[in-house]
Image (cartoon, rainbow, N blue to C red; front, side, top):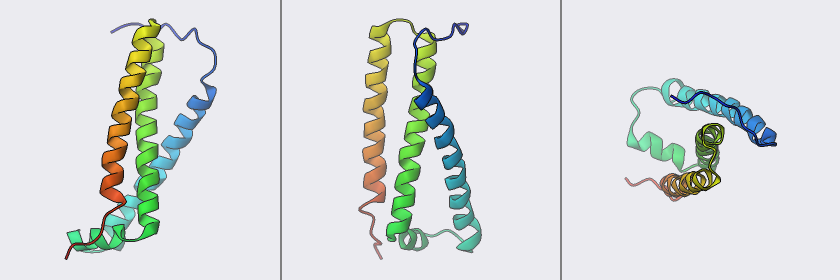
Length: 121
């Protein structure tokens, strides 16, 4: 494993703060998600129960916020490691482009799972 050399770049404070803020919000959303699915719904989790929840604009909005924050948090964390350990601007920019592309693909997959969801009985 490469030793940490620190970053010679200035800035990044906003990304650092938002990484912490997004992590805290993700924990709260996860706890709410876990509470609703395992304690308030009661009984077995079925397709119809999930469909009823996802038909609500409130839950769609909450799930989309969860998706966006989780993607940002994960990919920003990976990119922070890249910035710390990779000196080449070419490699850093290439990896950033790949991460952005993968993040966009995952966002599209997640959004198409959440937004158009309608119960199929």
